[in-house]
Length: 83
Ligand code: SF4
Ligand code: SF4
Image (tube, rainbow, N blue to C red):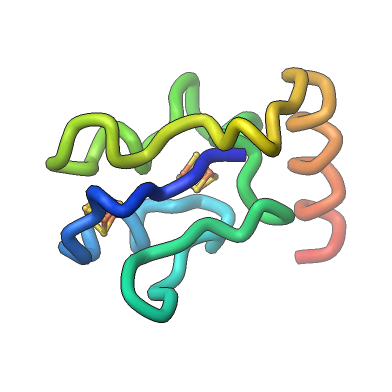
């Protein structure tokens, strides 16, 4: 899963672009739900939130939540079936 760092300026560019509804406004900055973030696996070739974020290096790979492509695909399939 990806992580939004404190560089976030709350511009709201990323939230509507997430295909998994994983992004929401947190207490002070936007946040990513690790259970819903597939790093865009199943939807796009690259994480779309990173593409639209205007501040470089704000959205990073969560060092606590590194997942294989297979694990991310499994998450995508599970989310798909529960949608
Ligand atoms: Fe959503 Fe994709 Fe960003 Fe994860 S990487 S939060 S799935 S837009
Ligand atoms: Fe924050 Fe980047 Fe999302 Fe804007 S696009 S709300 S700066 S993480």
